[in-house]
Amino acid sequence: MQYSELTKEQLISERESLLSDYKKYVDMNLSLDMSRGKPCSEQLDISVHMLDIVNSSHDCRSQSGLDCRNYGLIDGLPSCRKLFSEFIQVDPEQVMVGGNSSLNMMFDTISCFMTKSPVEGCTPWLNVEGRKFLCPVPGYDRHFAITEYYGFEMIPVPMTENGPDMDMVEKLVAEDDKIKGIWCVPKYSNPQGVTYSDETVRRFANLKPAAPDFRIMWDDAYCVHDIADQGDILISLYEECKKTGNVDLPIIFCSTSKITFPGSGVAAMAASENNMKVLRARYNRQTIGYDKINMLRHMLFFKDFDGVKAHMLRHKEILRPRFELVDKKFTEQLTGLGIATWLKPRGGYFVSIDVYPGTAKEVVNMCKNAGLVLTSAGATYPYGKDPKDSNIRIAPTYPPVEELDIAMDIFCLCVKIAAISKILSER
Image 1 (tube, rainbow, N blue to C red):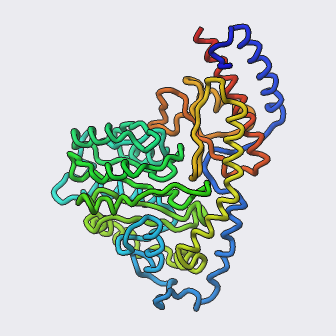
Image 2 (cartoon, rainbow, N blue to C red):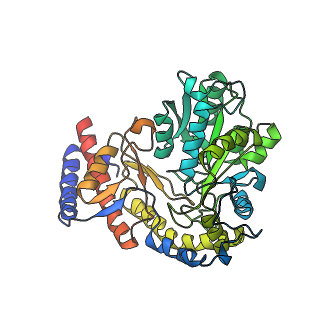
């Protein structure tokens, strides 16, 4: 029976019972961390051989004979560019391989356009008063942090089961030339795990922005991160943009951070020649070249894209039980109560749950008091402000399964207690 259908006395009795169980967890002095989407130790272990793969001066030469210990190749090793081109469905010539962080490359891209417009004759974004950026919600907090840092007004765009609300996106960008871009995680979105439909991708390719320098920040972070046996298929935005003549719209990013080692992987970006001309001008002054030994290390380890796909099957074996456990706990403990809804992602790194409106912060605080640290409530919205105070991002990858089991029991308990308290306060 739904909690809203219970009498006041029934709700109070249920809450007392749940609080008794909650106190038992508090008394256990647990320390459980699910605050970020970090790979677990088992995932890191499957890449550890990479650390020994370059061990002599001979090993430090690329396929073309380049000594990777020296300066050069601002765009990265050709073999690595080819590998990333298969990740994100573009031509190798469009790819620039960078350092260890795609987030860093996104930050640099926004920073570049603040002082040098991607379109000749347009005003650099720094000089555009009232500049704006579209932010699909719930979304990735670190994306929002970049545009907040640079003083953009961030406009929330609701997510649907097919991606961002494209009716809203099309209307806004066509009417307002101060809107300079949109953040997108198109496959297994952070945090909902939604993959943009073919129609959504094509509508992005057909956008007609009022601002000639409007750009789609296409963060394809989870392009190979399937959990289900049959993963989702994301069609190529760039190929669709070729058909519409809008090749300058997207700038595409990805990395191996959740494939090999977070913080020690390799990142890449791809864009049209017009965009890359502006971005390379910055990078040529910013660095003489990124870590080619790390690029080489990855190429020797994977060899080709088939090697990446085989590696990701090992990740899937490790992660699937964790995601199945989260869905099982939610289904068993929250179904039918009318206080929570969630999605079952087919890939990616997160599970998004909407708890009873007005209780997300309380749920997170209660979990913290019981020794379970979660992503802050509101983090999935610009400025950390969830208007419904309901969305919570669950990151099930890092804890061992036995700890995740306990963590989800605590979480479901807190969701129920907070919901009852809120319902009672509303009566």
